[in-house]
Length: 315
Image 1 (spheres, rainbow, N blue to C red):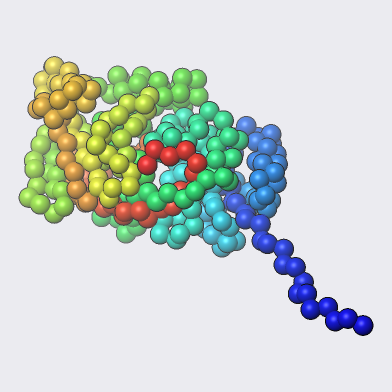
Image 2 (cartoon, rainbow, N blue to C red):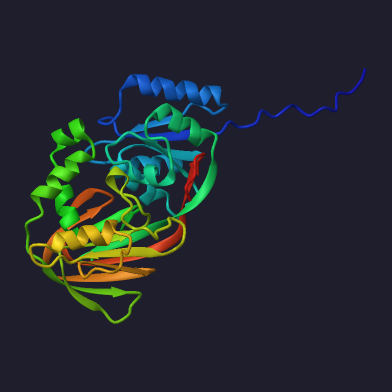
């Protein structure tokens, strides 16, 4: 009788994804079925499927995914869903994946992710490699809790556009709906602002908007922060201060012209942190989400804090 010395074979654990999905942006059960089949064909376990709600737009679901020990948390929705998932995953080492379903899809556009086909985007996550990107922490009006953004924050005119964009037009026209709101919001009064970068002596301006960028492109593929890189540990600030009736022409020249810094209506700054104090309350937005009004904003970049699992890469 021969003795069997062979140890029993151990079946390797299949990797597992969690999908945090905004059902309002989804095409329904067809997408769910396609992603489940895709995970099976790509050698992944059945995904954990977590739908967001109005009350919890993604943070609770991302925490549930972390507790389950998944290998990637896929944010399937618009920029708001992505931001909520990133807020939880930053600093944990668990990567995020992107399946764009929204109007703006700003982070996806900046990273070169496929925004036309959610199943293709999911395939790129499951077969991708990890990239580390910067996360920016923000604190409005000295609030107890920080909020993060990945693409851009804004105080003033640009946030007013986000607050006033008509949802019906967004569904029909996409990013052009923001142009319509932007034209309506052009008339307005400047506000006195104090802007300090990296704790240096503040500059004082009468501004219509201050924007803080973590990467360069916004709606319509417009590159508003030409020097911004999402993995360089640096923030890019854009101050819009149009003067008089022709001031907005100076803004257009400053943003789209060849000599971007040579206009009194537009100024660029760079640093690892910034503090902005306003004379009176202005609208505030993070990655296209309008989040109320405030007079004081602190931002700090957290270099390489978030891992993103992806195939296409512009980083």
